[in-house]
Image (cartoon, rainbow, N blue to C red; front, side, top):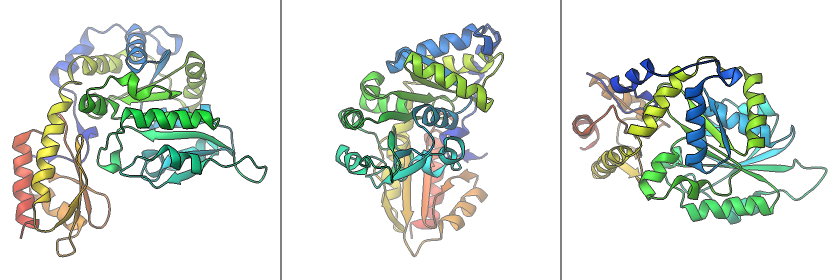
Length: 342
């Protein structure tokens, strides 16, 4: 048996989630005739405190559509250096929207309002126009770090004061909501657009929902159509997203507890240099020089039926989700101890 800790995107829909498809009502999504998709979008808009929402195939498409709507060619967007938009979307902002990116060096994926203020360019015909700031909640490569809602609101207020739009990559926003115990609208207040992903900790196979004002969503729909993201009987997958909302949000706390336990046990291993603070379901750690390389350790673990992620020469990432349990965690720790706890 293989235990896959590479990412929470590796989750497979549960039998109950699959059964939810059998009774869903479907229609042509492009004609606004799919009631299941309409229901999902309405629920997510309400959940996030926004006027409207649109169902999309992926979170990357949510980010790229938001960037396209909020900017003009030649503009500049501001992101934290480790963000998904910079590192994992194949240059989408440049290729799709013809915008530049200014990278802020933050703290585990987060930055200060003052850093945003310093990054905004003064008006000049020689420079790009600062148009959009993007934040990531939680911060994936920051070890699943949670932005405090008051910090998010301060960043959004700074953006508004500078004439910028504010966008939240909320792929794991519900992890932050469960961890903090603070409702989603408090996190998203002041942001012009935000989305949540259903294919990570929530366990659905397809789908993300982008939310904002009615005007923003009307424009987002146009870009969705242009990029080929419009669907037909999308209720087939939207029904599984609805199931996830009803059954898989509160259980994210189990993932957090397992990740916390794994992080604590890994930090005690002899050949581990450091473990990033574990706040939600992501454990990122660096191997000491005397340890095998990250690539070598990944190969050894694969032979033991364990999959983890390599994110640098000596950096590994472990992500907990509904398809790995404490038994899987114990097996992972046992094999890691064999290789890096000399």
